Image (cartoon, rainbow, N blue to C red; front, side, top):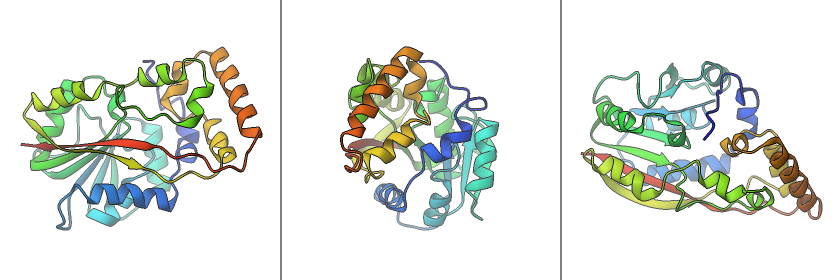
Length: 252
């Protein structure tokens, strides 16, 4: 996997390319509510918070939350565009979280686990900052439980290149359970459509998915050419939806 330096790549377009509709946001918040305690407030961590796609909604729904993000540029965008009185953004990473031991009720990692360089250290650090029975909401892709978005088939090595970014599910589970965690749940969430196929193509052109950094210029060019031809045949057709995995782990 080629590492993405978000201080030089993607940060300018990330918020636009990965924007969520209110319906999409409600769908994910409902999924999180289903696996977190009912009491309020809950103290949360949004680890790998990026431009703050979820951080304000977490603060509104559950209580005070700290967005933890290593990229200076991504934090700057979050601080400017994703404000909430109950949300703050700090420098840090999954391996080095700026929070006291046993201080958080939950942590969310939404499509950031594959960026973590020292995963065993991250497992230990997440256990440190969570309270006993605290929960980690791990929205990650897994190479053996991988969504198949419709546009991926138009790129050379599309599914293979995307799946290669991620660990298999059993490997992730083993990493956590061997360190004393337990699996509290595993399921899928069907996110509502982003709109039409043409809408999705415009987002994809911003290249804010990790997948695109793994392809050569020729692969990108030929893939977008095929995708544009496919979309041109019916641009107003709704973009198909697919189910995305959510693994919930509990600190013992």
